[in-house]
Length: 93
Length: 108
Length: 168
Image 1 (cartoon, each protein chain N blue to C red):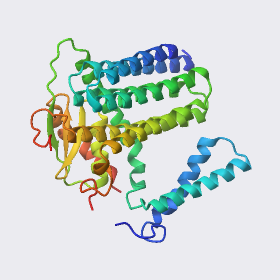
Image 2: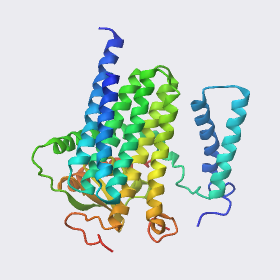
Image 3: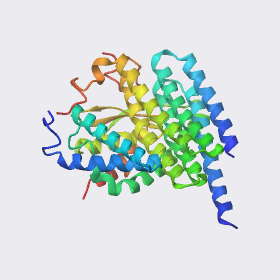
């Protein structure tokens, strides 16, 4: 069952990469890469159980954080002024 | 029927459902027509598929240390994925990805 | 503007709750209880507290511990809701004919506290088929895969449960 899960995740990752390649435009690609990161986390977790080495979960945990931070970082690059807390919206003070 | 067999069956069912959702999320990412609808496919993977898969793994994990890590991964995903999706949607909208009818703020 | 010195002012509760939480996190994640690693753990807890203090991000919402007792129940309920709506989206994704009519609408959230609003919006996004796009006058603007989805969220038990999270 775990091996089947690995195969299913690989198929899903390949399909997600197709969306990342065909686009169109920036945001579809970013979305695909974000989803791809989630699938990578799941993939690492399944491999961790499959191989019986619990320290692999640490890598998955770290990858989940890196995936989130990188998405936000790219969005900050494209929207430098709006996502910073000094902008007009976002701060309800 | 022994307990371990029961746990194996439950874990297998959760893994199967999770895989189905993750693959469906990927298919939806390809099939759905525009950016916002594809975001829904993404949340199908992130929220539902990931939760089911990790619950299935949790039943097979040996030792509390693996269990704690899997639960933490699940919680992190549950917190970060909507935040990322929200940031993406808002940025996409300001860059002029059109929302369907009822959008009067799309392009600025 | 946040206070000049969060550790000494009204945010003392948050400041006191943070180091034990960080220490517990280190102890759980490390799994090796030798003197070297425990010392490193204490050092890293101090480092993190110092960085957080320098960033001045500690306000009364940075560590909303008051929702904690009811959070597990809410999460279980939310996961159930996620599964229910996942089935709907699953059918839409695999349906051979493309009959997708997405819609946008607002879900009222004006009366809620900021924390409730954030939890509510994130729960909406987390549920497949609905995505919160932005806030407009305190209400949440929601994009739904089916146009009926917006009204269904507003009528569901979700807003009531989110507000119940903060009750004593």
